[in-house]
Length: 231
Image 1 (cartoon, rainbow, N blue to C red):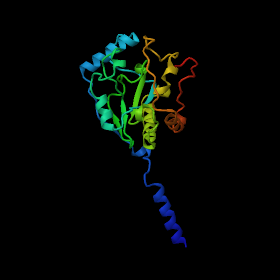
Image 2 (cartoon, rainbow, N blue to C red):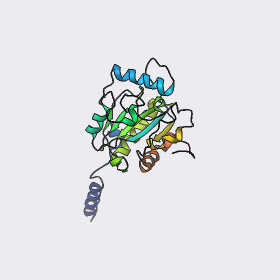
Image 3 (tube, rainbow, N blue to C red):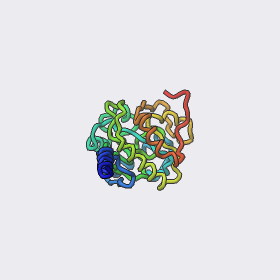
């Protein structure tokens, strides 16, 4: 009977772990650089001057915010191909605010694989008003830019990255989703000078943010403040 019981327990264990979510110990960061030459650097400096009123010699930042996103693109390769070029493609709503392409520091595939696209302490164009303070993490998914379809593996990968970044940059104090950025307008971090430059966001969704936040409670990261006048 004891042997049978052990056999049954073994079957249950195997069944429960048929598609295990990777633990943080299993994650590694794979460097997969996007194009970031002189043109993109100079365009970023121009963006900083135009939108933040800062005349900078380089594009280094001192990150204090982590922003989670979804790409609204179904595959890792297509997401990467979108972010890779130095200049914007078909995004007329963004071109008028600067021709440098949108970017992000990290890209997380649906299986939880983490790619680093650029130096963590260089500015990426990923969130209006907050780029100069924020590290961006893009997650492959978000069908039709509205479906909350990010995976459990992506939750775990984002938890790993949040912990990694907080340990590397202790001054980081806020964890937020892109869809929460309107709530940051009246904070010290908001630098955007053009009050009309705003695009409504839904990524990465409340469910994803709840799941990630629940697993990094011990870091005591802040959330964006409540906002009565948000769009």
